[in-house]
Amino acid sequence: AQSVTQLDSQVPVFEEAPVELRCNYSSSVSVYLFWYVQYPNQGLQLLLKYLSGSTLVKGINGFEAEFNKSQTSFHLRKPSVHISDTAEYFCAVSEPGGSYIPTFGRGTSLIVHP
Amino acid sequence: DGGITQSPKYLFRKEGQNVTLSCEQNLNHDAMYWYRQDPGQGLRLIYYSQIVNDFQKGDIAEGYSVSREKKESFPLTVTSAQKNPTAFYLCASSIGLVNEQFFGPGTRLTVL
Image (cartoon, rainbow over all chains, first blue to last red; front, side, top):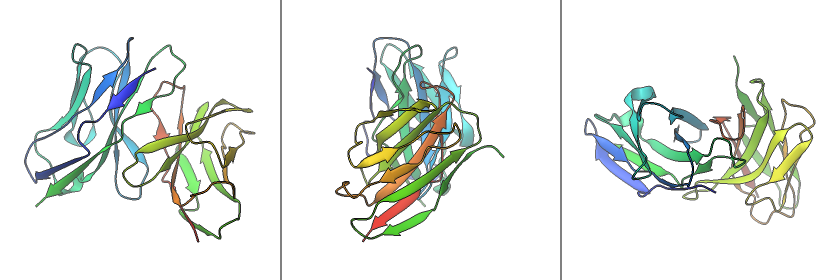
């Protein structure tokens, strides 16, 4: 079965600075990868997903992520953050063709300071 | 508009009472899920269902029950056996088990 590690529980950053949220996964087969965002007291919303093809995936709100198979990583990046990006971010992995539901990481809290 | 609805947004109950949280989707998804979220704990899976009339326990099913009598609906009952029920509950659905999940807005349950 797959597993996900989000290395940082909290990432503080100043407005307009770049940010990277790290995600590493463990799986012996091909994977689907997802990043979700959760604003306070709301449900999760899909930011972007990798299913196959290009390893650089662009999502909503100016976010992008790069799938690195050799390093089993799927880090999320944004070149310039806004105050409104303050939220919890979750990485998830699933195995196509498998019978396991996606496994979520514990989340990274992105805190954008003015 | 297609989506998932959860009701109510906030729910208060006295200790010892059972309570049922509603989850409805009109996305025609086969799979549905219930998660519990506590501060700093991420998402913990309670139950999931791949098809109507079938459901599986997740990591923390004790003290909870579900039913899946209709494709659109997956209600969660928090029973009096759940020792610490105060939490934020999220319902989700997906086309299949491995696909992206669509989440509802959540229900915050407070047991007094």
